[in-house]
Length: 140
Length: 140
Length: 108
Length: 108
Ligand SMILES: Nc1ncnc2c1ncn2[C@@H]1O[C@H](COP(=O)(O)OP(=O)(O)O)[C@@H](O)[C@H]1O
Ligand SMILES: Nc1ncnc2c1ncn2[C@@H]1O[C@H](COP(=O)(O)OP(=O)(O)O)[C@@H](O)[C@H]1O
Image 1 (cartoon, helix red, strand yellow):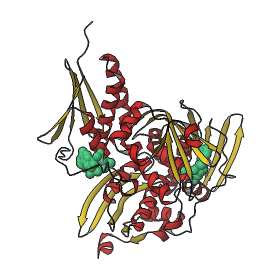
Image 2 (cartoon, each protein chain N blue to C red; image 1 turned 90 degrees about the vertical axis):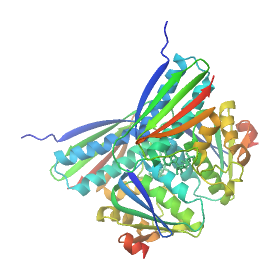
Image 3 (tube, helix red, strand yellow; image 1 turned 45 degrees about the vertical axis):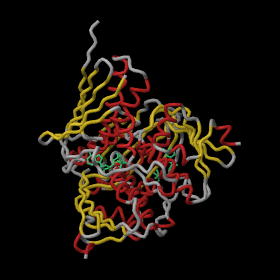
Image 4 (tube, chains in turn blue, purple, green, brown; image 1 turned 180 degrees about the horizontal axis):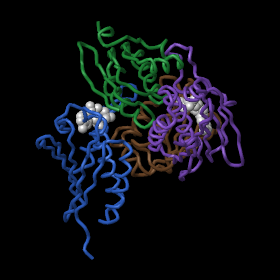
């Protein structure tokens, strides 16, 4: 049997759409026989990236499409996320997660990008015209 | 032309379903030529009631239906909300909204039920078997 | 809902457009959180384009009013339409927030 | 997600089942708000049946940890699976919460 090694998912800029992500990650894990932990980490990282795009990147109140392309290679999963929101490069953004501070001093927030950087094996960003393209690699 | 004077809407126990409520209230306002403020108040009160049912009333993780029946009489709108969650009578519940306290002392929450009682002209509750039935009247 | 951020002098202005309800109040919570990690922060919420607010939206406002006051900051509101103002009256919020007619009045 | 409330002695126990994410963290926020309006509150969150948590869930935990600590209460967690524990480690939450093996260990 020939397995699909590419899958595309389109998400609209609405928090409720994140449910699709969960289902897509479960289907991908079943199709590509991924360990549960890898699919959970991919789900988590994508939830952080997509919810940030929905929350922070649009300057109008219109419907926008966020495209997620999943690809399975020999020893890695490659995922790219494309959106038409304002330019944002998490790799050079000045954000931190205060992970070593006591509760009283810890700020709320900043964990999303920290999870992306920690749980993926590599992350690349590029801006192409009016699009943000973020590419994630996760080793198998 | 004969106008419909009854409408039923079914909502599942998921926050995303509240969007249907907004659309249903807009359609109802157009169909029954309601003043904008009345339809906004009905939308608000229903959002409070339904979100409470979704948040607080189910003791399992299964799908449940919440039924909303809208009826237009000569001089009022009558709305009944039926759910199969645990018994809850907002009219006798011991909840308050602290609306006269300064910010530092005000507790978070308690406004939902306060809105229902303030914005509707009358509210009735009954338990029938395993169902909660809440009936709202709003004068036109 | 759409939130637009800008900075006028020392004040962070958030313009909120559309509906603020149980389906989307997390978006406002995220924006306010990322602004209120510092003391003495000044925030102005312009509600001129707000069409609808429910108790889920109001609870975020109260939560951050408490937080900002405790950190010696200011949390101001402006641009309330008469329908929105009525909701603020019923909830008693009219008495606990600094409320201005419009951005100019708040910022001067 | 499903949240089950119970009271053991003076401690409010919340059992969380399923996924805690950006689509539903408001539900936990509502429950915790209605419990934490009083000082010296004791809360135990049993995460034994939690399958997934994202930063939206974690932000609610941190928000309430700060609030409860400031009001001289206790906010305890128990029942973390190894996958959930790893998320708590990466986020540094493992060091700021009181974490127990299970309800018995937390409540004794
Ligand atoms: N797609 C994006 N567009 C614009 N700004 C973003 C985007 N993603 C993240 N940010 C900014 O980066 C900050 C940190 O993001 P994150 O680590 O997910 O934490 P949080 O959302 O809890 O603040 C956000 O507060 C926001 O200011
Ligand atoms: N359908 C319901 N079933 C069980 N408990 C409910 C229900 N609706 C409301 N409650 C209880 O009443 C309280 C007050 O509700 P509300 O006025 O909407 O404020 P909030 O949800 O912000 O606490 C809730 O905290 C909850 O404990």
